[in-house]
Image (cartoon, rainbow, N blue to C red):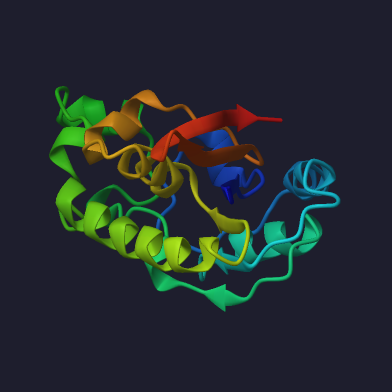
Length: 188
């Protein structure tokens, strides 16, 4: 059966520093560009019926360097909207909101878990339409793709908080006995 392959973009200065990066379009570092090329090596020989990509430049650049031909830019694959927390770290957030947890609380001035969950559910609906023609790749961001993993296995958004996803890694989603499963996660 066909699979959905997730590719997280390569390192940026903000991802390296642990800064929440949603709407801000940060370029890949030199290391991030190399990471993107390396994740592409894991994809050599694979053909995709569709490659859906976030509108952010860091995701599109990763797709290009990984050798993927993007078939559609999908706004629903953009990273979690961090609102008031854009550009700051969790440690900094905890200085004023010590109990804050993205996966339960969402973000002031940004998205709630239900809002990003609805976006990702739309992405998965689109991806499933292409699966009858072959594998599908989704190129996006850490938290958004963690939500993809959770929603694929029919779990709430908060389960994404338990699915670590490093920069320029690959994941595979598929089926076992007709049920959606995670086949591979956070692979380099």
